[in-house]
Image (cartoon, rainbow, N blue to C red):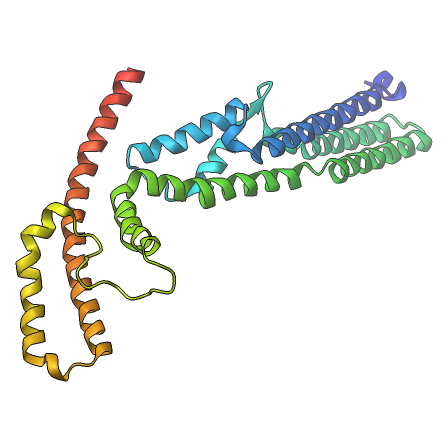
Length: 283
């Protein structure tokens, strides 16, 4: 043991360990930089890890199982990302592990030097070298900024999955009929009207189809006709327009309730169909 201390063997070992920790820190910074570049185009990326994450997120909505916490989903996948058997968290904290090891080794060396009564110059060299090791580790963190890149990667992934992909999948797989009905009611009808015309036509319900319009035409127009026959002479044009709007809104509400019932039945059927397809594909 005394020969190891006198020949500075443990000091060389700590030097190699510090250099190795800084190398791992550099590798972690490069990996995060690549992931940051791929996270800017997740939909078209060739990164297998991100494609798997994207596919699993989309599969949840195909099964009508929405992801309520995308942040937890992204963190879980980031924790399972490995490089050469090492997690990204381990590469990120190599400076902490190395600092603890060289601190303990330096303390043991100084205690051994005092025990074997080595010169003060020897103890001073070990103490100063230990401070330089800590300085190099801190400089490596400031230079590579691995922890900062990890936070930025998490924010970019969360921004895409929560603010872009989640809304798209919800509209496509959870509420397709309602969105189509809303689009037909409030966009196609408005686009068909000439510019400058903002009044609703009382004889064209927003969601009334051709088949149901003939069946409900008499029952829907009877209250309106009776009301107009009784109060028609005293109702102004603005009041008449308001009444027409209210009648139109009531008919739209009834139609939406009917479509909601049909949507629930179709959603249940589609869910069972998707489960069967997935089981056939993977089992």
